Amino acid sequence: MWLATYRLLLWLMLPWVLARLWWRGRREPGYRHRMGERFGLYCTTTPAGPVIWVHAVSVGETRAVQPLLETLLREYPGHTLLLTHMTASGRETAKQLYGEEERIKLAWLPYDYPYAVKRFVRHFRPCLGVLMETEIWINLIEACSQAQVPLLLANGRLSRRSADRYVRVKPLMLRALSGFSMIAVQTESDAAQFRRLGAEASEIIGNLKFDVPVSASAGRLAVEFRRRYGHRKVLLAASLREGEEELIINAVQAVGGLVHQALLVIVPRHPQRFEEVAALLSRRGLQFIRRRTGDAVPPDCHFLLGDSMGEMAAYYAACDCAFIGGSLLDYGGQNLIEACAAGVPVLIGPHTYNFAEATEAAIAEGAALQLPQANAVIEQANRLLDDDVRRAQMGQAGLAFHRRHQGAAQRTLALCRRLLPPNSIG
Image 1 (tube, rainbow, N blue to C red):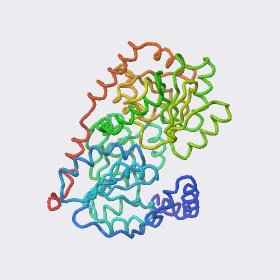
Image 2 (image 1 turned 180 degrees about the horizontal axis):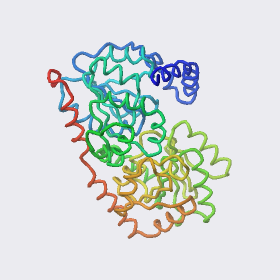
Image 3 (image 1 turned 135 degrees about the horizontal axis):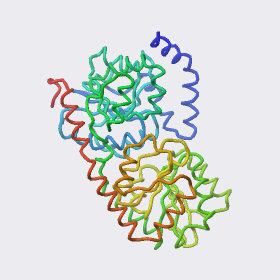
Image 4 (image 1 turned 45 degrees about the vertical axis):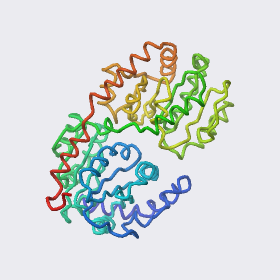
């Protein structure tokens, strides 16, 4: 009954799915690229030889899986790696990271309609599927089971809030989760939430995001950013979600600005919001520079809009203190690992349930501070910008925190080795 109801709802939602896909393409044209793939219609040829398929829904997962993909390329030279996405920003990030690698093919993962996912499996014939974090698609998993494709849920995470929702449809979730050959999670807390749904985590492997390398190009770009910023301190407000930019701007104005005429760099989480945030700054009468112009920031300008994709590592490396968005309002927070890897002090708001364990560990190890609201964030940022010693201490704590939690990529690779059929190993 549960499965039939789920499939009926999918069909009833089809007009809305099509309309939303076309609507999102207004702001992000990538959504209108190869739309047939969303329904299992692929015009590309089937890759020759064995295929390892990795699904990374969006930007964060695409970057997190980078160390695993690079290791798979070395370990399995006879294999093609298929990387699938659901979001245009995720696919664009993959093009930036892997565009020159002939053995990595990109495709949209189809929506979870039975006929579409079966076409996907028939077309690519993967010998292993790796789904990142919380990608649990019932019909897709069933199609893989029928085709005897082993599936690994890698870097799995499941917050209590998400688990509370899934418990309402526990029979359906249990059916889906039983289709995984292995479930590898980040933390014991994640394992406990999967157990609530009736599934056992095979392994607790840590978080792949600790293993993401900082590229040399990001370092060079950070130097260029610093040159454009001039000789001033920089507060980065990273990955802000809707409504948070205004809270941060209000807080900066409430305290009379940042100390030492510091520069505030605002980077929205989603590219479709760049124009919205530019309009907000203009309405408030604030002079600002846009990153995409490439212009230097005048000394009397105190705001920069980071309207670029794929450059977050450089933004972190070029700042003196970073606030991680998605945490002031009830969005559940964003990943703070990349900021710690850059050796900068991290500030976060009260809502961090999507990254609870990493956040708690960073705070406990002295790499991050959690504040209750925007005014407190800016007041603490001003104290840090005025205290070189404290910033250095927190930055060193962040680097140590980052080093201490590495190793998930090799542990995930070991699981892939166990699941790959013997006749596919190259």
